[in-house]
Length: 333
Image (cartoon, rainbow, N blue to C red; front, side):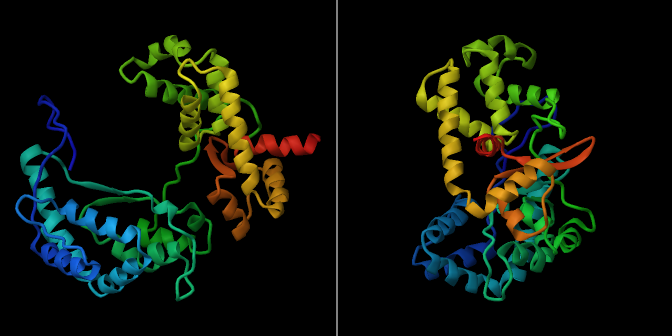
């Protein structure tokens, strides 16, 4: 577990609270037998070691995943009970006693990437996980933050999702950082934030007000950095992916030609995966700044062809800027 000591004390790299839950010792031993991989929590071994071994074994084998799912299915209630009693309750008590913390927050990331395939009962994986099993996801005795597939929020199960996980409160959407307003005007605040995001990666110890003075150490001109921010559409992974592409081409300061070569490759890759039937929908989104509720439109969101933005004027949708350049290129040709 990671965290900080109370104010005034030195910050450690980690808060080390070691727990040895007896239930999970037995559970991992039984899972090890199923996976033909011995898993023992002996001595000072941490709980995460057992989890890591299970993940490593099941990642490469659908057969093992299926066997493990069947084995754990009937033990869900006892697993949740033991997680609360043997791990979370004790860990929270130690955090409060030793570090004067108020509690524990667990972030379960990457669940927004759950495949949208149907299971044997005809339910999609997101529906099964967050709707059918939503009550169980809330049974952990701590604050939990889950990432949820965006398409699920726009589906017919949107209200069910709100009640299962949010207690009637709608899930929070993290939209893209807007580089443009809905009317196409530049969003100065969004661009300023994205510039700082890039510069902070290169100069983390430099004060934000002084990072712009070092911009020419990273790019040949301010316009090159702005071009990077604009074409990312405010999508963090896209922005950092394009930046990494520049790093693969040359050392800083990056030239405009280098960035344009990386963008060209990115656009070519996008164009290859867009289906012929999707181009009319993309043009419609670009013109109307909205999307439909049909599954085809949800695919545009999941494929990162379309981004969602929010601002003082409300919510709107627009094309990934790299894809928009392709669409505009087709329209003008």
